[in-house]
Image (tube, rainbow, N blue to C red; front, side, top):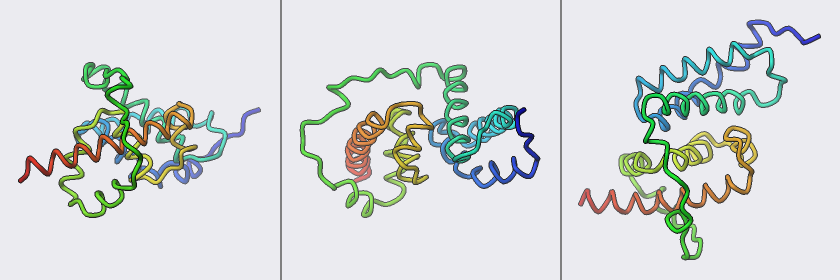
Length: 175
C-alpha cells in the first residue's frame, strides 16, 4: 500500500523551491508572466503526482517538472524557439579550456550577463541556470534534464563558451 502524504509534506517538499522553479522557468521562457503561468501549471502537476514522489531531492524533482512544463508550453506557444539541432561544429571549440569565464563573469556587470544569457539557446540557458544560478550538482542536473552526466558536463562547457562569446559581443555593441 502506498504511503499517504499529508498537505504538510507537500508544503515542506515544494514551497521552499518555488523561487528556484520560477527562476528556471523565467530563464527558459524569457517572459515573467508566462514563467509564472508555467510554474503554476508545474505545481499543479507536482501536486497531482505527489503520491508518486518516493522521497529524495524534492528540489530536483520539482525542477524536472518545471523544465518539462516549460518545454511543453514552448512547443505549444513557440514551436520554433526550442528546435535548434545540436551541431558539433557550432557548439564546440578547438581552443584550450581556460578559467576565463570565472574572471569574465566576476567583472561583467549584471546587465551584460543577463543580455548575453538571453541570447543563448534554451538548452544552454537551462544548464547554466541550474548549475551557476541554482547551484545544482551535475548529478542533480542530470536528474532534472534526463540526460547522462557526461552530456551535462559537455553541455555546460559549451554553454560557458557561448556565454563568454555572447558577453563579448554584447559589450562590443554597448560600446
